[in-house]
Length: 129
Image (cartoon, rainbow, N blue to C red; front, top):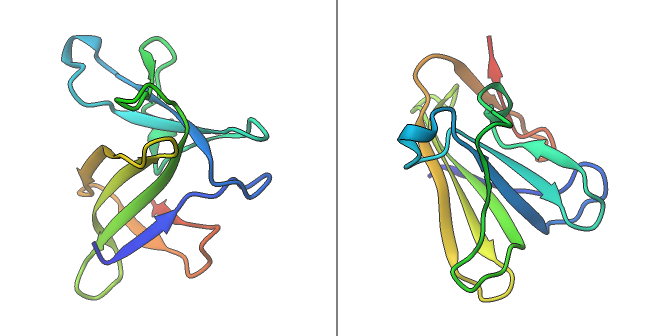
């Protein structure tokens, strides 16, 4: 990973989140298609990366650590092309606030869209159509 961004709530600045996932096809429910974070202090919700495009309310689940807790810090890592002009792949991970266990939400190759990472951390990386 060339760059890692730690999630912070756009509304209140907190870094404590609940995480939900969504499967587009519940028959192939091995890896989620989309993720959404919910800020624990203020309730503000936001999709991770381009998850909003793939979110389905019909097939959701709540992320729970092996210790039973549901509060996490979230980080998104980006692997960039050699010229730093786009994102080659990304990975999303969590850290349980109760026990410190790390978990991976997902990892994807970016092949259909050019992505750009802003220098402002609050802007994050966005797909450029």
